[in-house]
Amino acid sequence: MFLLILIGCGGGADTDSGGSTAGGSGGSTAGGSGGTIKLAWDSNTEPNLAGYKIYYGTVTGTYDRSIDVGNVTTYDLTGLTQGQTYFIVATAYDKSNNESGYSNEVSIMVR
Image (cartoon, rainbow, N blue to C red; front, side, top):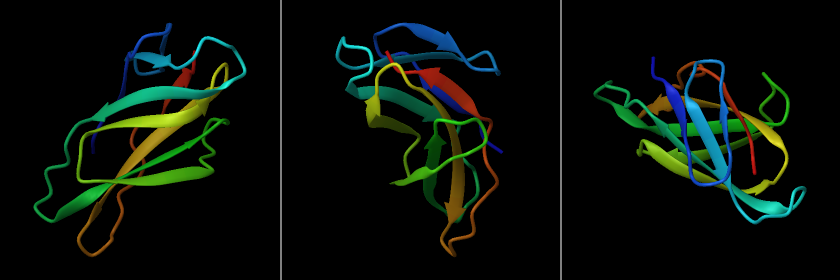
């Protein structure tokens, strides 16, 4: 099990249900696009770890977009809509492509 954390990157700050501080940044017009959320998570210690996937969407518990970020523990999620709240989870997968369950969900309104 690992913990997904949002890292502030300018803009305002919100708090997810786990108490982590979250921040988003981008341009200055609400409703625009181009916002960014900086993500970080605890490393999975499995010896056959191959990488991580980020799942996100605009409804809690519903992740209609995903990205394979490889074997890193930080990632900048870009091209997001300013003024929109995103709900984000991560999974780890091994060299046989077995995928873990979701991490904790974090949420942030991109500013």
